[in-house]
Amino acid sequence: MNKSPFRYDRGMTLIVKTVTRFTLGFILIYGIYIAMTGHESPGGGFAGGVIVALSFVHIMLAFGKEVALKRLRSNLIRLIISLGALVFLFIVIASFAGRCVPINLFFARDISCHIFNNAVIIPICEMIIVGAGLFAIFVALVLLSKSDKEFE
Amino acid sequence: MIEMYILLIFMITAAIIAVAAKDLLSSVVAIGAVGIGLAMAFLVLKAPDLAIMQLVVEILSLIILVRATTRKDLPFNISGRWVFNTLATILFAVVFLVSAYASLKFMPDLGSPLMRVSKVYLSEGLVRTGAMNIVAAINLNYRALDTLGEATMLFAAIIGVLAVARKIGRKG
Image 1 (tube, rainbow over the protein chains, first blue to last red):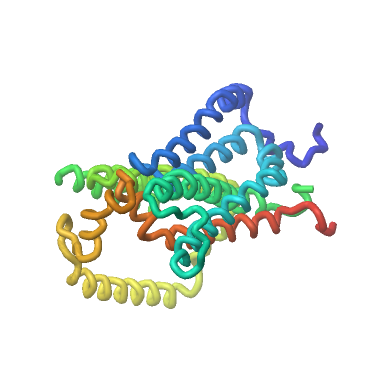
Image 2: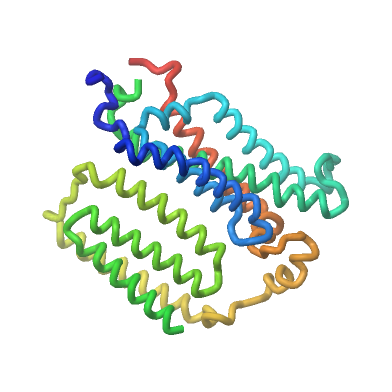
């Protein structure tokens, strides 16, 4: 056990770990709620994304850097982040060029489809990108500043 | 308006404490107090969207500052070249004050903003976008390309961190 490179950063005490296990899902759901109801009440995709990033920071502070970095390296999360970015880019560029290019796939003429795009799809994409981006900045600033050997 | 002045005095005091404190951790905590005061000031000025944003970003940046700064010996050197440093500081302070005074003369008063563009947003925003929250309406409809640029910047940050922290193909 003592040969582990993470021995000085293995998280906090058992109390903090147990409370984190209970509250983590609620923080995540609250971030998604803030992002989804941004059209009717204060909030929005950016604030929801920051709350999602805070839940990942919460994991890292409680359980140590090993668990958090494993989450960042998983392929599913990379796929979700890239899909969010591509869908967001497609919606914005398509609505920008919708008059000259016939890609009115999402963009029906009635306003309900437009509202669905703007109230559901774009906040979710923005939440994913902002959450992952701020957590990546946190990882880069806090964890990756040490020497390289500790991450192998 | 009195609570606004109380908040401003609180924030200025916290900022002075942050500059003057010897300990790095206490100055970081004082910076956090400045941010919380700014969030409450946004609430007093009736901007709950900005208040939520400021609060969560402040928490995240406070955690980053505590974890990233307090464990390291940051080189803080104040000896040597003090003439040049003092002259540069005074020069930049004078330039900033003069330009800020010249530009603040043209700003409208607090509470009576210029409404040339935003008049249309306020009157037609609900009908044309269907969003009750006018901030979300402007962010996601009239200013959607701005939001795309912000997301692009964060996505570039993700790609950079994943490229640095990758495991496959790394030597040694």
